[in-house]
Image (cartoon, helix red, strand yellow):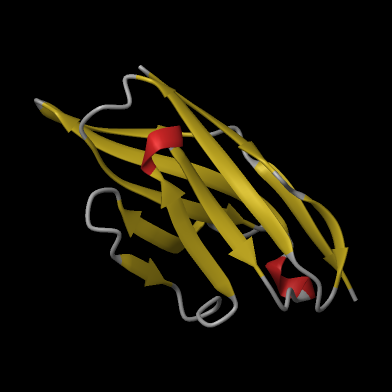
Length: 119
């Protein structure tokens, strides 16, 4: 099993910044990628950024490209999401996601952290 704990959410004014962290524990070997999703009220969960655990390749949704940066610290089993130039439409619960392959492909989710951007 893998446990994911997010932190760093909160209330910020438009144009401000926040940095989310997600620490993985448990069976953290054979990780292939980690990602951040978000879900706003009444909307589906949206993939916003991914990072390959070994090569560090990244992907961003168009809605956050140029404003958000995903990074990881393999030694600390931690992934970060630096969010700059925040907009009210970035308000959502942000979820950390981890994928690993250990015979079979497994996906794990954190409990989510609330980000609220005021106008």
